[in-house]
Image 1 (cartoon, rainbow, N blue to C red):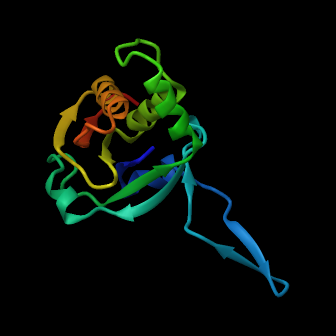
Image 2 (cartoon, rainbow, N blue to C red):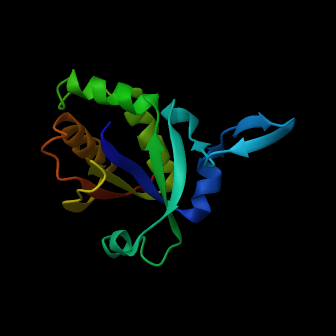
Length: 164
């Protein structure tokens, strides 16, 4: 998927939601060395890897009050499951009531986090819509933007869930 896609979470919840993946190890001169960035996973999302980054001031300024003042991290997503999801969206009507396993996993993550912001920036730069939505509306918004990636203005969608 040609988009910067991830989820902004409270740092305090990351350790309970995301589990570390085994690091990539290489051997040089008989010595084992870990290489690359630390990667994390949320098993219900399938083959998705997360890398954590700080939340920029620009992003912070666009967050709603429930997340302002919190210590946050941006969990950037990558992996084969994103490509499979993109293909599924392209091949289905965005209004379908059927849910892709990626969507189910994303909703599970949001419910467990209780408050999260999904960030979807096509080609890594465009963020044109800043909204607060219910969990189901977040999935609709994601589908529409993935379906029409070239025309997408990108979005930051804060989802506050009272369920767990």
